[in-house]
Amino acid sequence: DAMVIQNPRYQVTQFGKPVTLSCSQTLNHNVMYWYQQKSSQAPKLLFHYYDKDFNNEADTPDNFQSRRPNTSFCFLDIRSPGLGDAAMYLCATRRVGTSRSTDTQYFGPGTRLTVL
Amino acid sequence: GDSVTQMEGPVTLSEEAFLTINCTYTATGYPSLFWYVQYPGEGLQLLLKATKADDKGSNKGFEATYRKETTSFHLEKGSVQVSDSAVYFCALSSGGFKTIFGAGTRLFVKA
Image (cartoon, rainbow over the protein chains, first blue to last red):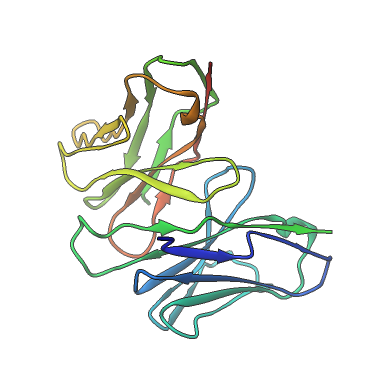
């Protein structure tokens, strides 16, 4: 029944070693988001895809990239992780363009990234 | 720009106590309002939502009413349980792609 799936749930990487986090969805939603969350603070939006259109937040570091090869999958690539990138990374999906009653963002369980 | 302000935590209650977590918002449009809950080590789960003034969202004993006149969406539960211990986020969406989150309120419920 899982609707937004994130793999792995826990990821350990070394300082400077590239890492990829994945997200998949079974909801057929047209928007997919990546958030960074530290210490149960409010999630910070990194970027989102509306279909194939990529939208980067102005303050997202260049170190963070994303790919969406199809509707169901979206990847977060961290090219050279620093100690400050240790966080929970949350994927979310949403169907934009429907009625307000069904327009809701759904989150995956998150990937906890540790940088050694 | 749009913003959400919610009461600072942590909030500590005994089991079966009444819960209120205050949330107020500022929005230029006519937003939809949400409460999300985050259990330790998990992602955010939608708890309830309301899309227009005077709507009441409810789920699992939690309720919140969309008050346009006071720009508020306070979360309430009549009798909390230990299993309700979590972080609660109030959020709004004004159309467009972004959801604006409050800072979160951590709730501890003691047995």
